[in-house]
Amino acid sequence: MSDFESIIHEVSWQSPSNIALVKYWGKHGVQLPSNPSISFTLNSCRTKTKLISRKNDLSVRSIDVYVDDQLKSDFKPKVEKLFDHAERRFPFLSSYSFEIRTNNTFPHSSGIASSASGMSALALCICSFALAQEALEESDFWKSASELARLGSGSACRSLFSGLSVWGEHTSIQGSSDKYGIQYDDVHPDFLKYQDTILLIHKGQKSVSSTVGHKLLEGHPFAEIRFSEARNNMDLLLDCLRKGDKFEFAEIVEKEALMLHALMMTSDPYFILMQPETLAAIKKIREFRKQNNIPVAFTLDAGANVHVLYPEDTKEKVLKFVQDELASFCEDGTYLCDSVGFGPTKEKC
Ligand code: PMV
Image (tube, rainbow, N blue to C red; front, side):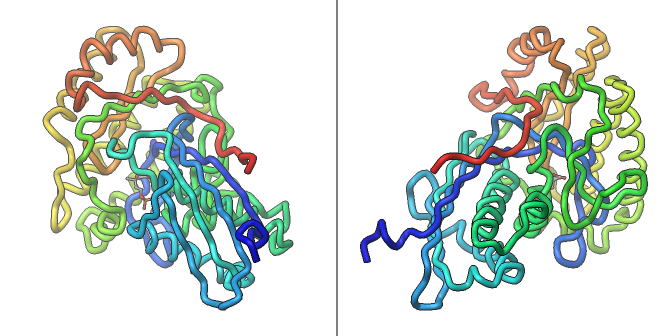
């Protein structure tokens, strides 16, 4: 059989990264969150993934992962784990071999985690394949893809929706679940056009891996307080999102980012992931907000980079401020300009 004839199914998706406003940090069971989280889906930071599935005569699953057209073995364990989960849901997968071709739209060494965009893109490809094999109902597609993405990397389950996404059961959000993310729509339209300029403070820096990071909450003296604070912050933030209160939004989002880092700094072992430049940028952002009455805010992931969040109608002024006063804190002066986006797109193969 020629290579061409043996190809039985090809599917390709592009999926974005997301930035949490109320953070997920700490999990239990099979990748279930200890508190609800909410995020902006990003627009430009995306992963494009193609899944090529071939019927396997040997009944031994094989998976080859190509990143930027190069065969990569270091990505395989995470991908294999995702397929183990997928196979439990879709047993037919066990009789296929897979070739995965993936690339990111953002620079590799930027320190921007690609697990959310990468795992969501792959979960979408697997669910599209399951749909084509009639192993999945069309009406369950997004829920199933989000659930599978979650099993690959928790926060990835929030990358599948336009605008804002919520993951984790929360009393005031109907339909919210620990198992999958949902789109969150009860927001002032200005938030759907928010900008996110990512200051690449330390490009090569290794963030705390998620596996290590979430474990730090086990037995952490502040764990229970944190989970209850996250729930409170959800309610406070939902109120701001609904009302369009951008200054209060800034206060809550910043407290959340600092609480994430405070947890890491008080863990055993502890991690200090902010760099002097991270703190310098934070100070400037807070001053700029106060002096100019512009509701620019910062948030952080589990690393040194700073996400600068601001409304679209302040873009010109904020970008000038970034260039004049924040770019010098970035490695090689590099920052990425992104904004709230519309979620994944299916690509032509
Ligand atoms: O999805 P994970 O396991 O990579 O964890 C993500 C954790 C944070 O990015 C720090 C917070 C979040 O909610 O995205």
